[in-house]
Amino acid sequence: MKKYVIIALVAFSAMVSVKASAQSKIAHINASELLQLMPEAKGASEQLEQFAAGLDKEQRALVEEYNKQMSAFDSTAAKLTEATKQAKIKEIQSTQARIREFNAGADQKINTKKQELLKPVLDKARKAIDDVAKEKGYGYVIDNSEGILLVYPAADDLMAPVKAKLGIK
Image 1 (cartoon, rainbow, N blue to C red):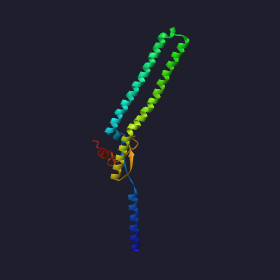
Image 2 (cartoon, helix red, strand yellow; image 1 turned 120 degrees about the vertical axis):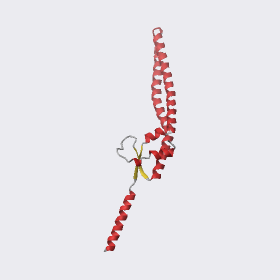
Image 3 (cartoon, rainbow, N blue to C red; image 1 turned 180 degrees about the vertical axis):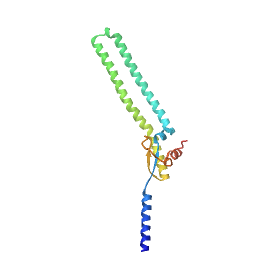
Image 4 (cartoon, rainbow, N blue to C red; image 1 turned 30 degrees about the vertical axis):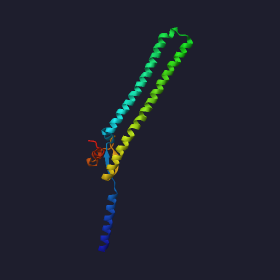
């Protein structure tokens, strides 16, 4: 009888230890803060600003062209024939359409450029987070940059080891 009790206790202990080891560790990191600290992200941001400034310059040139056309039309409208007026109005409308198309395309170009510039930075950050999580034995890493994670232990914050892995001080 004593033998069966010992076997049952050993079996129960084995089941409890298997269940305890099957639980995954969970960590957290503020991914937005990490990206802001990465020098590559700063460089990408500067490149994006330069790209946007170039587009802004083009947009201002189009608006300036439109303003010149409008002031030329306003000053000469009384002297123009009806056919010439209609041609000038079509020209002005064409410039307005180019401005609208340019603005719509500029937003798309900026978004595309942003994704293009940030993809390598995001990939590098993701790899560092994955590597540190594996090294520390974490099965899950939660991004707490949105402030949704309300309570968390400081010991499970991967920010410091990931920064170290990326060489960020």
